[in-house]
Image 1 (cartoon, rainbow, N blue to C red):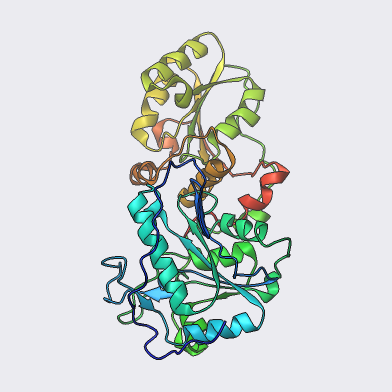
Image 2 (cartoon, rainbow, N blue to C red; image 1 turned 90 degrees about the horizontal axis):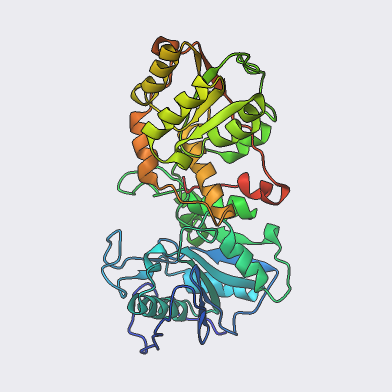
Length: 408
């Protein structure tokens, strides 16, 4: 493919009117020329984009293009220009060096599958590709699932469509603007780490747009810390320490405390139920008053009970402490040591590995964070036991669990 002139290449130009597809439904595969769509992923695979063992993958917004208006978000489909006038020449050199050029981009705004939105987006991508002057493939994640960066579904789809050619990760590159960089002067803080973490998950070298299009010294911003790094779990405990309660010889009440997805139910099922505890779960019973009634019935019959619920504040724990006092039984708190962000990681892992799992949204986590107060013996507990999180994973999911699943 011949080189294109760079002069003025960062200005948007009118392009020929492109065909827009009427979409059938979110679960239907739709093919329109080089475009293919299912409920989760939109792909662009023109025949001239030849498979290769070397891949140059780039994000779209903020990396290949920026808004022509200077606004954070584009005013319309035509509000774009190339990030750098050098882009066509640089990409042409990569093609001559045997690289496949690929766009890998999160596009959750297209999830509702509006035929108009999808059609306009396709036209925009084709216009950008025409401006670049090289053959390009595209992968666009429509949902918050395995395909959304930093998760690696789009890379897996790329490898599967690479005509049997194994991608050489060491020779490949990923470039994106979501690198977790701090603000500097008038330059905004990056909205997330998702591009840098995507490259980490895949195992390929990473570049910011400033590094890739310009000079390395052009990007000198520091990165802000991750809220949670799953790789720290590789060295965590593989078994629980002995519990202070042991096997109860008289009726005992345990109140679990922890965020959603912190490991409470797994701990109850694997460690307390074998000791003879009856599990009383709000997830099963649905109503807290009924939970209290069922717990009291078990205790009155001489059984030990564990309350499997979040119980993140003293107010939610007080009725159970009062019940234990009234019945004359010992009451303990088991506090999951799993942090909020670790719990969010666990929640995303559940979404990715279980079709039956009901999603817990960020509003619930934020509400729990605002209410959270660790239990103390002053509330009436005989002991507050901190329970470390111990990953219990099937082999097929271990690699996924220790990847970066959250964007920052």
